[in-house]
Image (cartoon, rainbow, N blue to C red):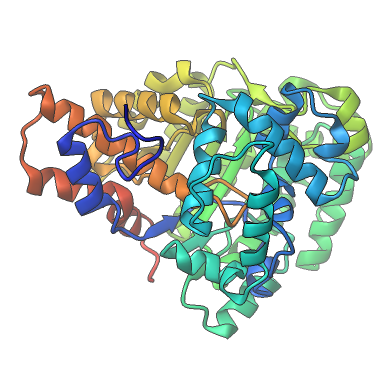
Length: 468
């Protein structure tokens, strides 16, 4: 019987072990998409206890706790951190085969050197041991990043953000590159006219000009795009339920904008046409400034209306959506490619039934200008677990070039999430190791070792082109 989570965790063959220990494990981390709070990096924040850093914003854990019968006050409510940690410890034994069980114990091992299993019986000891370490300078936000050999982090930022914390990090000459990512979703979300009007007024304040039409909206977004570029930003990101396929003329787009700004609700077709035109406009900015664009697709968000009203958005009431993704993607990518304005693009789907669609869609717009110009992004959100990662890797391998893949990211708000890169690398090495053992690919260790190192780190460095 194998020991749980030993040095060969998830590595079923000798080939897999060699690939991981001699190649993947030594590679630094290039975290090109995350939601880390930049202020906490700039302030080099110290955390008071393990409950705060683990449960302060982790909707993955909240979902599991609710499913285990834990009341909301221990998730998003006013219970103290020790009480919340206790409820998480009580949930752990019920989480077998959920990736949270692996992530939790990887984090305990890699950051705190704790091999014990978290349970109600060990909760006190683990809480005290982790909290004692967190209160030392070695566990500040920046030092936790250093501990995990992080070289670059790209945060997620709204166009109206001042980026003052990024500026402070640049002035401090922090050796880990921390750059913003341009996330303009609110500028194209017409679902709530009042909230949209408030956002446009904030955008007007940021650019110092009036926004009175779709055209002037794009001018304002371009203004902020240029500002982000001056601060080192080289990536945009868009979170959409689906890329729409609905078209509208310039005059119709201006009419839609005026309609929502007057407080009127727009139709679904109008909102879709506005979103597609907006994505095309920002896509052209991305190409002009040599950025990479990311598109995250396929979520039903905030499905529990009762708790959305009382506790707010993004607290763990989301699910995989079953929208049709192909037609809109073609409308967007082909439009930009037709005018030679298609930037490097990373496509992320959250519904595994779309894996083959996305893998083949990337091949439609490769143009030979660089390896893997259009990327099938890593398993995202509900798919960033062993089964989801394996399906994504297998689809990409069969329908594209795995060796050109830019690899894993954390997509996390927690400084304790970096072992997710190790988790991905172990899964990748195990798949390749099994292929070698089965005689499906050659046992050429220099070739395979280089591929593992490239997917783990080198491909991302070369693809995004950000100087480290």
